[in-house]
Image (cartoon, rainbow, N blue to C red; front, side, top):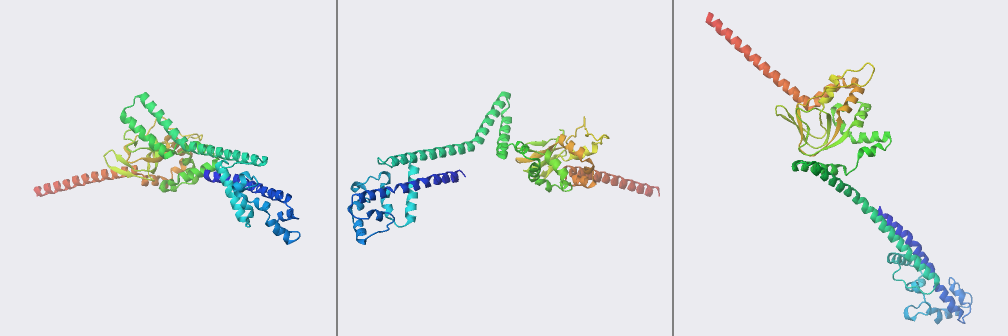
Length: 409
């Protein structure tokens, strides 16, 4: 866009220069009239105006052969009339083609604007001197505008990089002030680089907050289209999805980070947008997680199981109660995700508790969740082992009874 603007501005300003220069070539007309005034040929002034001859054709031919008229088209050392800056275009007036005259004038305008009239030596004709000064001033103005636009363009390119450098310097000062160990400093630097690469320093929440509510809603729906990959959310209506999308916040995790850890509290639901993770259970079994998966979904079921609606319709509170994680969720690569905090999830469950207690929603939560799948698999294994032990005891009892019966007989 900057190049288009500069070229358009240059062409726009060059056109009147070339047009005015062509009009100043009417000094050729002045030279011919001067030659006519000292000539003895009758009606010579009528031959100058558009070539409409009046009188004998002999006078026309005499005017064509007149030395004074021919001298008007001489340049260099043979010139008898000082054309000044228009000397190189004197012969242009003899061209019959209007296209040639226009294109050459256009070229002359380009040349003078681009060189700031550096190759022009005007005569003592006052208007010619003023016109040359105008060309120089216009060229300087265009050059200043070009430099200013280029400076703004380069500043715009370097602003983000400067912000990144300032932030890195602040982070380094903070880590030095807090005397963080080198291993932790490396992790902080990796996190800062990944965050900057993913966001380019743009605060999306600040941008969205300045937009109308309907545009914010449509943009959030576009951002969180990955929610359609989660079976749980395909069962929800748009009012519930809008309430959830409004609470989602972007989080970035570097490789090796623990989103949840065994024994810690579950403080969020994490919707994975990009990256690979693994869920490690207490017994060491692992389940992969990738784009479109959710971790921390047990928090939603826990809220629904421990909530009790207030009769006055107020918010549901969970004071003093926290869900303890029984697994560790670790990032195998850098991960981009959206997070629904526990406080926000509490608000959503209080507003839409009746819908979220729907058996279909509960079934979707348990069916899609690696957490609940792991719980179900563990319980099935425990039940199967218990049944095998019970069958073994029953078989031993039967064999013992048969042995006693055979001995008694």
